[in-house]
Length: 379
Ligand code: TRP
View (cartoon, rainbow, N blue to C red):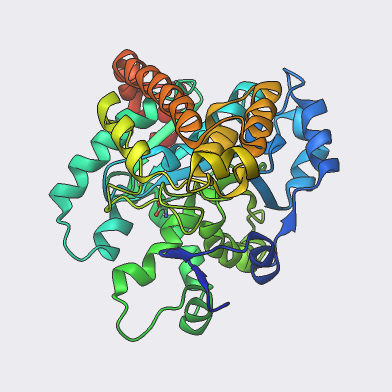
């Protein structure tokens, strides 16, 4: 692993070289050609901006899924570790999953890995984690998944069904493999060491279909271990599309943290808080003085406000190009681009909050009574 950044299943820091990660992890580029093939198969004939703008940029065997994607040949699996309040970056994989469900009508399975967070985080009790899990499920329900095609489960509650799959993965993985892939040491506790088998269990839920995982590239080590053993167990190798990580407010390095509230915008932040965080902390690609800025122009590539608009908040290609050009030429100031970001963020969050209230009544269906949930409890 390179010295100036670190990306593991439990830790991300430094200036991430996403191209290098593809090589280190052995994944493949999501090429223009693949994206165009995907676009042609969608209902809307439009790509989600995450794809268009190369925020989802790498994959494993997505080409295989694409070959027959219009025949309902895949299901989506993603998840959330409930260790602290959810921020914007945590929504990426859920937004991608929702888009896939809208375009292809696929089932979506969502794991709440309370067991993982209990094992990995030193100071959290099971009770605290359970409270966080319930809050997170409300945030995830706000995304508006199809209640008959979506199953949300907490690991400690659904374990009876997960365990059968987890055991099979566990038996095929020895300590030296697990050490090589996850960096386990003599100090790693056994809960943590067993957990990867649980995270991989849902990759065996629907045996005759591809399991497709939209997630941050930091989660890839799990899929690697699954792919090493799946076929020996009679399961399909899991497939994945990997997104980059939404940069923290402080600059383009690392990822937002659940525990440092200055680095992130939380889903529950008030409009005033959003405004003050962006103004105070969002790393600017502007110049030190207005005079210099007008003369030399800003650097959108390193400007967090620009990047958040590009990745998440300004879907309109013409508008985002206009912002880029104006900022780069010095026409638009750093204060002005931040103002656009604040407005867009607050609209996004207000919408999300309203959806959260509206969709609360769907949670029972996602967990227990929807068509897919019912089937999964009978498994
Ligand atoms: N390990 C993930 C986290 O720490 C949570 C998770 C569980 C997950 N299952 C997943 C993420 C499947 C992506 C896909 O947040």
